[in-house]
Image 1 (cartoon, helix red, strand yellow):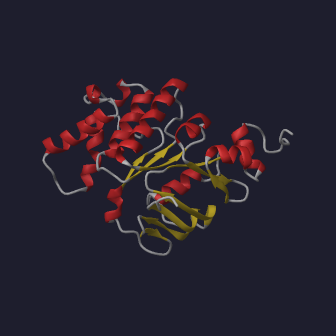
Image 2 (cartoon, rainbow, N blue to C red):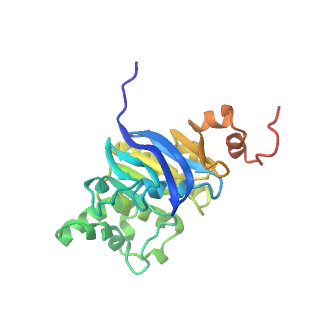
Image 3 (spheres, rainbow, N blue to C red):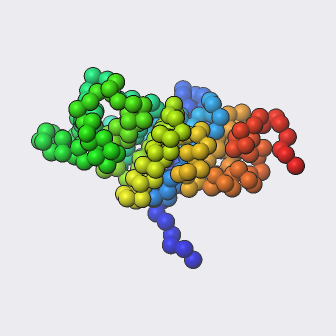
Length: 260
């Protein structure tokens, strides 16, 4: 038998949405330490909403989110503003969300604002180390407008890594990038996972990236507000019992009959 893997993140009966309206219901996922797990589905299916609930940016409507066996967010309870578990996650928001008035080094230092004061030289050293890890040390003094879109995504990943999290969340990391830059970013994500034994949870609809990096994926359905299937991307493409899942991977309308 194989070695039992530690569960890094678990959602239990999770409803995610806004107000009383759930965009995804009864999400039950177990993501192992060191796994790259992709949340996918068509536009408007709620994959980014589920991720925002996972990282504590919005409360669960029902159920809970657990990190390393501890409850991180739970419906019906007041959120802890600075839970210790929060330091175990890093987030790269969609489009990078860098501050245009700050250099890359200053952007990377932003997460330290929520922590007890540390010497500036120490913070700069940590930030430079992370920029070096994503190949941007030479651009530490540049502003976001002075670098390419792919470099902005790398800088956003560096910022997400400055507190040395155990789980890295990436929201559409390859969106808007050309194929070569996207492939380079895929390589970086794999390198970060392998070097740091880090769990990566990412939202994506880019099929090339999904097949390049994902160990497993969950497919969310917009019509039923449910998780249709979970598995390795190739298995979802080739043998999912759900036409909508196979259609997504085949880049065709779900209304079109499967080829025979």
